[in-house]
Amino acid sequence: RFKLIFLLILAIIITIIWFLFFSSQFDIKIIEVKGNKRIGANEINDLAWKQTNEKRFLFGTQKNLNLFNKSEFSDLLKEKYNFNGIAIKKRPFHKIIVEVREKNYFLIWYEEEKYYYIDSDGYVISGANPLEINQKDYPLVENKGSLIISEKRVKIKKEDIEYIVKLFSEFKNNLKNFNIGEGQTFG
Image (cartoon, rainbow, N blue to C red; front, top):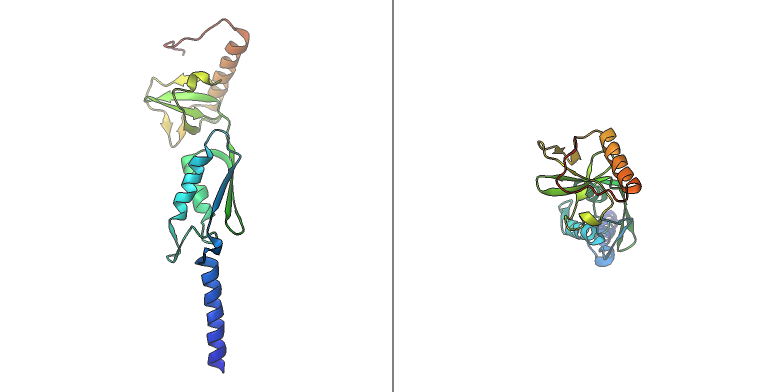
């Protein structure tokens, strides 16, 4: 009788484990991205769907909502982008919600034939499309010296960034007929 009860309890435990981690009842079907304005939801979605194909705990894929590693995905987003905040929520039974708070752009940095959006602390937020730069309302700073970007950060003082933005704003607002052309060097 003891063996029968033990086998019954073991069967129930195995059934619960199978239901929670292997059945299609908990497969992720919807990944919703909120709070993004500049970085496309498709980019974040693609990263999440790619992670769902990865193994977790040697016995299942992260396509299962219960096995999806939120901290791993958050770390991936932090590595690729520079957000003010990231929140990843699991919603029963098939949904993940990714909420991001994007940092504000302060200027565009040009170095080694690449453009970058920079925040107020000098961190690289993302790459900038050169075709869209003239349509933006941010100062463009070209680095003609040695490489300054290191570990996703421009080695420039916060006060210098604030001064550049303030100067740009003054030229833009007060000197409407004044045009800063290409090829001019300051400082």
